[in-house]
Length: 98
Image (tube, rainbow, N blue to C red; front, side):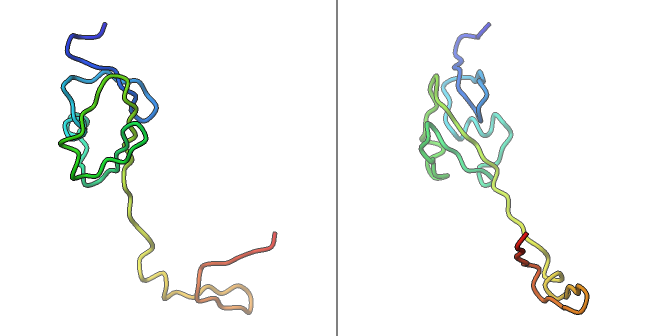
């Protein structure tokens, strides 16, 4: 049963019941998510971090919260050459034909 003062939203494809009134910022806190680490869409509109506090969430809204991930290979891999038979490659970017 749904409590009074709650709304049903779709969050990342799943129906969820959340308390109201709710904003994007409150939802992220409710979920335990840091706003600096995610991108948020409400009804297919990107919500910038500066608007998280002002963007309300209403019944039947569709939200996508995507975790931002950075990364890459450490610099030491660039320095390592790859030798295949008699060929030595300085780049690990190889394009094949098959």
